[in-house]
Image 1 (tube, rainbow, N blue to C red):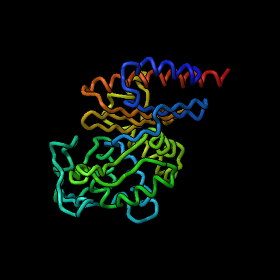
Image 2: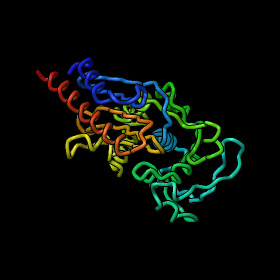
Image 3: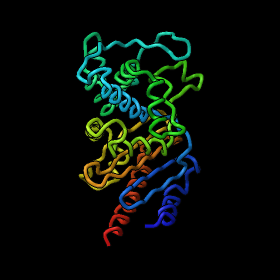
Image 4: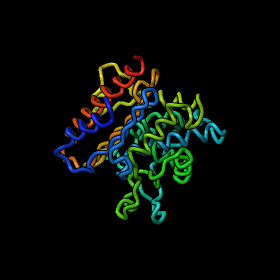
Length: 281
């Protein structure tokens, strides 16, 4: 399937939607099939920003700043980037309750990463950002080649949110980060392999994985807030990995955003498979 044919079929899927509601980036280094639509359009990053946080935690561990088996005391107390005022996380706004049960006790950094990615724990995320700093996360993703994505702060900083100081992402920049992880170029071969393993244990699989053949291994991170649903994935990470990122905004019904993402993932699978079969001919 040529990029032109693929684009025509994407247009058919998105025909009834505003033009900038959906962004998609695909990178298949094996067949050379690459595709972008609205790839530089900034979206609220939602929980996709947890991928850069994970990369930075692994990077600092690789440098010996700490060990992933070191422990942190779990506290629910953070400072707004606006004025340093204190705020705490709302368990009702979090997708994972388990870390709250550990408040006042210690959890390993590795376990916090796992909860941040597989269950999208906001509390674990803020603990890890406090450990490595948002500035360090931002510097690292720039070194890896992102151009527009910004990680400014932790989660649920409402003062910052009200001022429009939000974490943002593009499909192209998330694709850069996932490609780096898939290729062992984000931190190191060992660290990146562990990150792939964690991403492969993702528990929220309603978008990209649901559009792919049953049994397909997908290492991915989702992100959802009101009227926003994202998914950023390395598909088949153990065998000819390729990357697909789908960002959506404006759907009142999250199920509709999932359905669009599934259809785009299904189409991308067909295009990548066709490209790889063509390489064999």
